[in-house]
Length: 160
Image 1: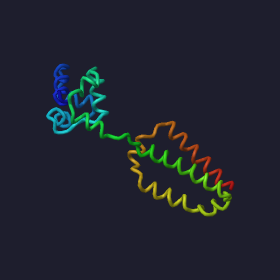
Image 2: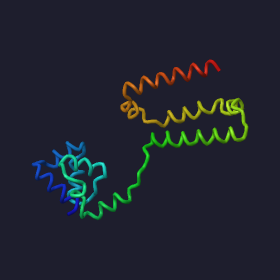
Image 3: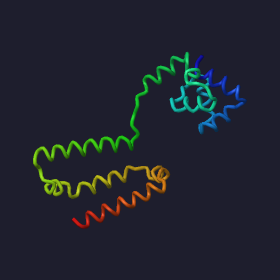
Image 4: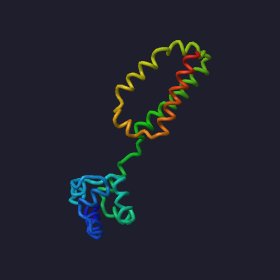
């Protein structure tokens, strides 16, 4: 049975309209309609949410829907943008430090070389952040640690 048919069956068993289901999944009614008529397929995250909502196993929900199985098989695990920045940045820091120390380069010469570039890169970064989304994602702890980061950075650069 295809996911759309299974979804419609479960929705009706639970006496839910497409609107009710859409509200519970925080989606549009059109998304539910498209899934049920086979126009589009739900994401893996949505399939899990549907499974939990109706208390149905994933196997029961997607078994027999080859298109959905192929979609999930083709989906690759991807880092979020924040995870990419952190992961690639950390790897680059270790690679650069290894290069610096293995070639006997002094940190003073690196500081001289990089003296203004960090600020320019920071400005470009700030110009490309969607601040409304960024602000909505911050919690009190993130703001607190962000303030500490700024204080420690400014105090350490002032003393140097």
